[in-house]
Amino acid sequence: MSKKNNSKLISDGMLGALIIVIAALIVFAIVMSLFLIVAKPFSGGTGIVGSKQEATTTKYPFRQNFSFSTPTFAENSVVIETHTIKSERAVVLNVTDNKIVASRQAETVMYPASMTKVMTLITVYENLTSEAALNEILTISKEVQERMEAEESSGYGFKAGEKLTVKELMYAMILRSDNIACVTLAEYIAGSEANFVKLMNEKAKSLGLSQSTTLFQNCTGLHHIYHYTTCKDIATIMSYAMKNTFCAEILTSLKCVPGSHFRPGEGSVFYNALLVHDLGEGQISPDNATIKAGKSGFTDYDTSGQCLVSYAKADNGDEYIVVTSNAPAKPDRHNDHVFLYETYIE
Image (cartoon, rainbow, N blue to C red; front, side, top):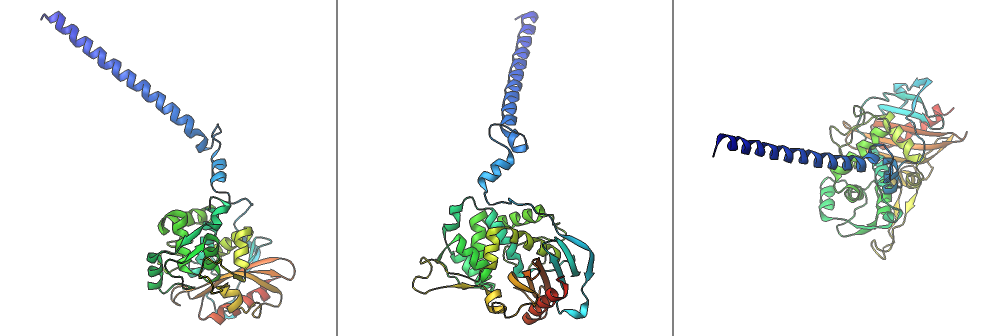
């Protein structure tokens, strides 16, 4: 073969390779264009598929549909004197004005114990995909039962194999502070408690709470060194929950009667441990308001101590939330709330 012919073959080979490269680039460009067209609506644009908000609303019908802003300190907000209450930290929020009127160490990090479950309630409800999901029957797993019993943290005493609806488990979680119900719901919503906790922290961020002051590690409130919040942030979470009609219904309920699928023939009732037992259905109550809802919590005194978030309707028509933490004993936390309502409701 001559040099001339050899050179021609090399040139033809290079030309073929060039054609292949150009064709591949064209195909890549077409694929990327189609991807961007499809993806555009989910990055805030508009198109046939719809916007991100429309897609979210369709999938999660119970997410926020009301205006909400993080509470701020009133200009005349006062510091609660140390000797007046037994709790180490406290906040008094006028929900009607969205202003904190009194506080002590309101933004100091503390352990929330079972006050955590108010955020868990919000997160469960807002991640349900339909109204029908509330009536879906779940089965208590052996793994969850054994794990929570090992922690000595089951509030009602559910057993593996027992069946309750999603809604009944939500009531049990709040009224009885039941951790088995809590974890069962978390796994139902997100596949695992770890994935559910990510949703909790995302919700906290959406409420304007910083991870430097509020960070969740579990859905129950069991003690963890990096599971923390502040009285101000718990007041914010409770305020949000009480604006949600469904969450408020559960938080204010005195009892829940589960259906016949749960322990048939036993007549089981979930009573509100705080409102019915601790406060005696109003027997322990301020003179100028009525405590309508709340969630208590307790771990060891050197962690959360006795803590409580409560919501009250004042005689003057205003709504208030009080949060306290690290009281030495259960009667102390109740007396502190009565004192704070009576002292700081205007």
